[in-house]
Length: 335
Image (cartoon, rainbow, N blue to C red):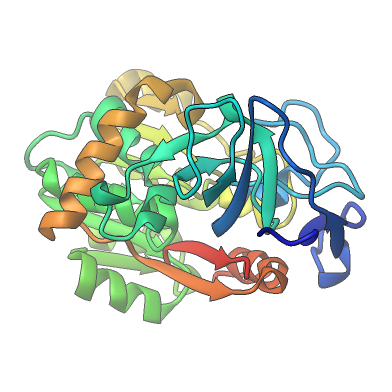
């Protein structure tokens, strides 16, 4: 029997530049039984992402609707069906949906997607943020054998996966950026990076010039700012620069990320710059899951992540993610 109440994490007030614990509220609310065509889901794992910080702003032009103070936060979650009257779902089915940050969710059956646990060594890997990285490597940059590839924010949930697929697609030299020396050591040791640039250990362009003296062919950018500008300065003829995030602005609550763009360099060197949103490529999601899960099963791919326990850990997990204290995808089990 499900409980009569559950806990959810709400946005208490909109933050300014600094996000703090008092901007969150954990509330206990009644559990609503599903009507016909709805599904009651017990959430097993929530994914914490930087986009949550962006959506706390009251701004136009964001990728999704902003959060409202007093209302629960949203995010990807893996859960188990408790009840689903009038639908094809059965109790015990595992499903994905977007009402994370709470222990239970009641939502229309059309808004959940059944997950096959047999496909995944760990079903939580179905929450990987790597879809955007896979798209950047496979569908946009179209990496060629021998390419020099730069992945910014390489220790994040997108960067970790993008780098592995870049190598599988034939990258000749793999360079990453990150915010700390211990992450750089992990990336070289566990994911096979040839060089990793560390923010704060010198100007980014100088570090990149030393790591890739002949320039780069592909950029998968999750950070923006001076890291994007360094990549543009070192971009070779016909380089493909793919922007999938802007963590340098998101971490401080920004909803814009500005860089100086040398348009003459784009023309003279035939450089392409592409912005990528995974929501525009949902038709490719099944192919991504097939390839990612197969790689996890045969050991050619890994799913770097951290997993925390307790719904009360979710606010701190976001704060730590934004501060660069975690590596890979950040997950919370909302027990």
